[in-house]
Length: 420
Ligand code: DSN
Image (tube, rainbow, N blue to C red; front, side):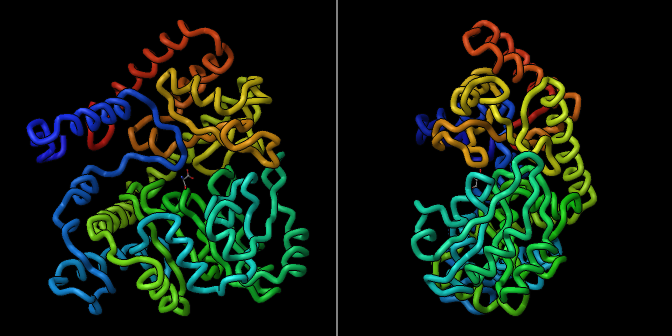
């Protein structure tokens, strides 16, 4: 238990009880949602530290409140380390999370009404990449490109054609549900041809970029890379905009005062710590293990005859077509797996005929299980249990047995910050 939380026993046992229930859920179950992870115990402590007490509107050396001796130092440390990790010229570590991070880029570098060319949502683009239901979808004109779901390839001739027709001010790549690496040189070449800026939302896989197991868009001359800090990077919940010097002033002004007020200095302290970890050789090994685990999990599903979107994975995630593989939709699959203590999330597939709350598949990823220390053999065991559960939706007794297997496995791999 985190220091001081035991005081809740007296002051608010109701809240304590809910916290303990969530701790147990995380301890006894396997987390396979690809965007989730277990942060470092040090980050948990920093999030609960006195940095949370401080208002720090502005940037280091130029704040609107006094008492910033140490907040300036911690924010500078976070920025410097974030630049080293990503090989960026400038880092803004203040976005409160992924949505304001992406909004800050659009609003800082573009004018309302401008066109952005981004990945179609059902092919893996994110809500903030212009979903009609998002405010950004109302403010900017989003055009779409798609992938070939058989192998994950992009038709760059078609993307070039769309870019020439629609003249985007920004070409955006990056994804929330796409299991392959990206050809940044090809996106950059098209952007240069039509005079567009380039942005990559690497939120899901920035840890893999930091660990040198996936390509870095900034190495290909991209203007901006955005990433949340809590997924494969294992930091606190937050966002970062990493960009060239040329865009630094506009990005900073867009984050504050454009979009946000006071940054969360406790999260920024956590980002400083997580970025320090991301620079270590252990982190590179961790990124390689995430990838090896994802490939092992994909292969185990393929060996069972299951259907994966693009046929496999080159990153931390796999997208399982549950309709084709098991004749059930993603909502039912998610619930069946919840029933055996394995957390996944239902996911729309490319050009999915079904709605997002009852889509045709689920998404899985290995960052959290890898953080616990699980390896390739464990991935094969998990797939075996998932396959059994998905093949027998009516068999509640089987789910009870499988849940016991999952709990036994979990007891071998304590969750950082919770223990076993
Ligand atoms: N919720 C995150 C994801 O799962 O991709 C990003 O919004």
